[in-house]
Image (cartoon, rainbow, N blue to C red):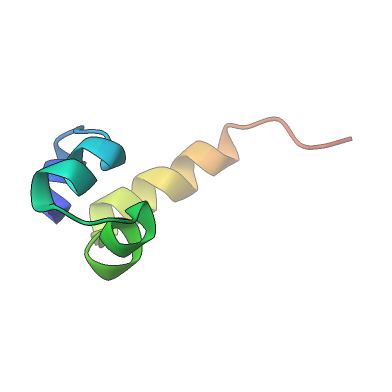
Length: 52
């Protein structure tokens, strides 16, 4: 499932593919960010405007 999510398939579609009844099961039980994804998210945060 992590590969499906990482390839850009929306979480609700992955949920339906694997047969989970709740999106939370899909996202919390099986979706794991690898270090590359974590670094990219951290880098994106640096480019966001600060809150006033």
